[in-house]
Image (cartoon, rainbow, N blue to C red):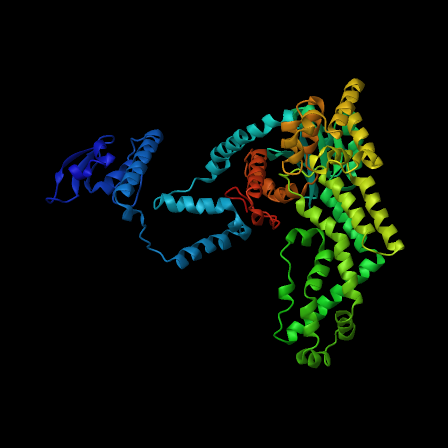
Length: 603
């Protein structure tokens, strides 16, 4: 049988002969179970691999390990066959794509799964793997999904995270605490993440029911997290816990006095933008823009005009944190189209019967006052929106945040607004800064080489932040004195700091990489600068990732008797973070419904 030499299954059966000359049909007996059959190699393979439905039974004498060996042999045989005959790689489609799509859709409808899952890169990986395997694939059981494969996936993630952990003594890390109220269960879920330049990882989550012990539970879990990571590895804790944050801060800092307790910067700026939008003249601009939007929307129902659709903005991040800014911006961008619109005959005919406030809308569009004030509002708010857009959990913005404060104040003071409005804006910016921002931001501004020579040593706020950073970071006065001496060497560009490459690369290199390359003559300051500039200041993407861990799912898992709730949360959140890191923001951008679950059998 020269043509059959590559078919490994023939070695495991005894052939008694064929029916017709040249026929692939043989009489054979299995060498493992002694059962006799008539048939071609496809039946031999099915018998040995455990396939059913082709006129043979699965061999009862072959155990799991041997069957796995046979499966590998079969995969290797098919690969060799494809190499010999490239045309064989083309799968003969027995179903039209539309039929397959309908089958996939039916699965989602019948099982009530969140349809946002189709945006998941893991869903697409699964579909490609199924297509590559071909016919005969049997999915793992509910038990295997909940136990065996969950254990394997957790082990893979922990192995990948090991490299991240190894970097913490060098760069330090930030613990991020994000809470989420679960209305169905009446409790808070607090997720704990760890962020460093090597990446962000989900650590654990706890459920907190309101009561006398809730605060103690959070403090104990956070303290345990610091101890597990290593107190000297933790430089900062960022919380997004609302009013409860200040109560926890004093307790944690009494245990770990060297750690910085910071608020979420993106949330702080969001609150500041809301306060600014409530200023009288700002509110008037926003209300006028909203009135224009409403009138144009009403007009579109009357005519075939689609001008409003073209005003939609693609910056979803700004829409989330600065909706008033985005509203005014898209109206402002359509100034010419709107002016042309209100002059055409269709508009003039429609406004005769319209119940909208068309006269005031026309006056705003055709006049100058609204457009001048709208442009001024956009110019004043632009630094805030630009900073919001920079918040990415995998990128350090330490130092950039303080520079934003400088830019925001400069923008306010150079736009020609009246003294009362200027005073109001300055007061809001400074009050929000004093209330919510960490001294680490001032230290980062001082140590970030991109902002070298901006007069930091003459800025009282920067120097107060630098002083607070030294006192919190280093309790030995002799070491603090050494750090002050070394920062003077940095300011004066002495030694390696004054080399041509160091000067040229200040604004071209990553700040941490710059200090690693040029800070070796001041090792104490180099270590502090690397640790400060390696931290983040926002919980933004941690909040997105945390949405994929929902309490109803975990409660269902408990009812199933699966004692793997923590493993499930660990795997789900870290896979979500990997997806975000790889740019798959759409997968997690829509909050999950309360009944979605990744374990088979959960409703």
